[in-house]
Image (cartoon, rainbow, N blue to C red; front, side, top):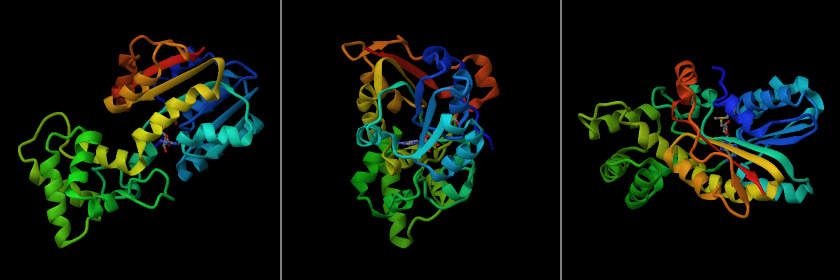
Length: 289
Ligand SMILES: C[S@@+](CC[C@H](N)C(=O)[O-])C[C@H]1O[C@@H](n2cnc3c(N)ncnc32)[C@H](O)[C@@H]1O
């Protein structure tokens, strides 16, 4: 399953990558955006690709090896980028790109536990060196904490009902697999039919909580102004309202940023038709003053 880069044209128009520049791709994934940047820079300059997922690093590393010195991949949490830059004494860069969420490869791999359509362990760690996985949250959090996760990170209306079900069921046997959870959710949310699957929001909440996604995004956005030189551009693509709210909050017009998108850009109809994963994408961009 190859991941198709989302809103690539819009991203390139805003970044205007040129030979000799240095651009950080904070979410390397399959390397689709990174490769397009390298092409636009004609392989002159540098693209630094960051991902916290070892498997993505390997895949993108192989795919982009032909660019030689112009491409480097690092395993890191993008929240730590300002610290990494500082420690390594790296100069500020011309562009920063973040394309949030999961790659198609992560979603399609049953053993990662991200998909409610595939049977696998309730893992959901993007970085497999994290100590706590999604099953641990289900098996260990208090009912109140679970309810908060489902409500605040999944915007799940039935957060309390789901939290109670999770706690009751773990008294008999611990949570282990994705489909056990899906079946239990289908039972507590009877008659809930419509556009989205009943497990969608709970899976989203568990994934966000397992990976600390909202805190990480907040730290990335807060640190972004220290990574970019004046005139440098930050482009961020998010996939749900919780993420978009954080990006919007940080990239406000002011002393640090000149907004390049008044409202978030949405993918064109033909992109959504060709790549349904893009349908919820919102792109915001700003230039460092
Ligand atoms: C949507 S994919 C990126 C796809 C990529 N733009 C492409 O064109 O192939 C998001 C990637 O970001 C990574 N990621 C998510 N949160 C991260 C974080 N806090 N630090 C580093 N990488 C992260 C995920 O592991 C995933 O590989």
